[in-house]
Image (tube, rainbow, N blue to C red):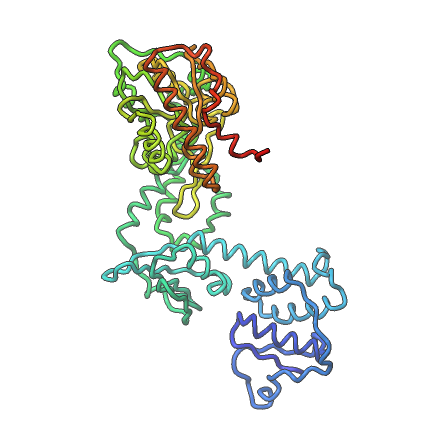
Length: 498
């Protein structure tokens, strides 16, 4: 009988080393006894160290999938898990596709262990509640009681999630500690070592109670996702019973209440705004601040409305606000705005000369960590937001409109037109006024080739000069839509020279 001794209940590297040596020695599963900690007597201690392999050329075969499964299964509390895993790896040498046999008894047991540990790991991530330590700045402690030995396996997730915190997760058997630089583990402790509560828990209870929807209450599904054994350690647990008890009464109140009239796309995208006598741009801006026509308005910081004089002859329309614009509430003040203002100066214009707005008034983005990545608006967003653009144009009545980029062209023309085509030929806006087109400044910033970027910038300046001249002269676009030979065209810079 061979004794394989491991340093801890989750000593994966130790188990892997012993398994490799045992396979090389040809030891069958029934010839191994697995032991955690010190040997029980000196005789067994002598047998702890694996013997040198009999065949140095032999190399056990094992898949990465099995190693990943074995590491997870070792976190299970089943005392026979070491025997099961060695029996499986021993059988895998002759049956490499064993894990694909879902009817095999050993595979069934392995999958059950993995499922149980994975569920326990997920519940720990969902139900750990950190509390601030009184008198110690930026230090937080959480108490949790896992079913399996998942602390070491799960701790890296909390390091990634709370990298800027000093924290500890205490459990009865094992504890994890992180100091913003290094992660280390210690012995288990009692719940008395964890804080009882902190100032933020009242806010969390208020939030939890506010998002509770009695009309969608399903107690069995709720208990399946939040098992009652976790309730005693959750600050919101004392709200669950009264919320469930009052759910029927609250639901009846919701049914009895008058229905809210839905907002339909057709009511806004294709309707003409009916402005009241005396309506001003400021009043329209205040009304737009509460806009919720499209599905991404709730994610933005605020509505970013247009700005400029009511008697502006030139209106410039961009795509949508960016990150900076969303925070500060003004159009074109970010990196693209800085390039745009420089181009305005070269064209003999300033922001005071024009009315500047966007086709879509809310910032659409995808969160990535602390960064908000720009996402182009959908056609539905453009159509729904056209109501505000129509209202702006009803008040401003611009003589010339310059659309910057494909989204602005789509909003003004009501259909998709390539930027190059619209720039060369012009287009009719939805209100019958003529429109010009140019590049969006952001497309210049995204250009990696400096030569191409410089040519695109010259194009933007030339188009701004043309729009300024037409706004001053109050001339129609008839006969002036064909670009002059000396006017730079950004597409030319992308084509190989003959």
